[in-house]
Image (cartoon, rainbow, N blue to C red):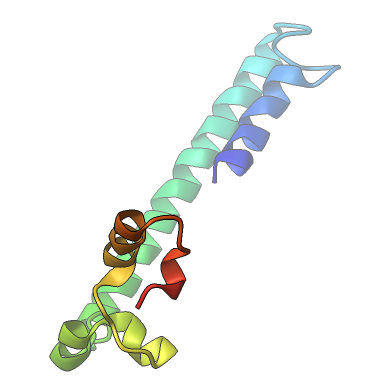
Length: 106
């Protein structure tokens, strides 16, 4: 989003023939105003559509995993591996035994 926002707002600033930094004309300031309005409209539209999508997903009960998966761990279903304590426990175990690689601890 940042790159697109900068792209939209930089044109009225740096355009060689009509940019604010080159001419400072009324046209260039109006162009910047229209581009800011466009960014605001696109942002409002995106937020509204995302809100509607997430409301629909919430009503259809598609945003949460089952309690069993939640307790077992989300990654265990995707990667079919047992959860031992997570990466932090592995990293701490590695640090306590010396220079072993943390994914070999187990």
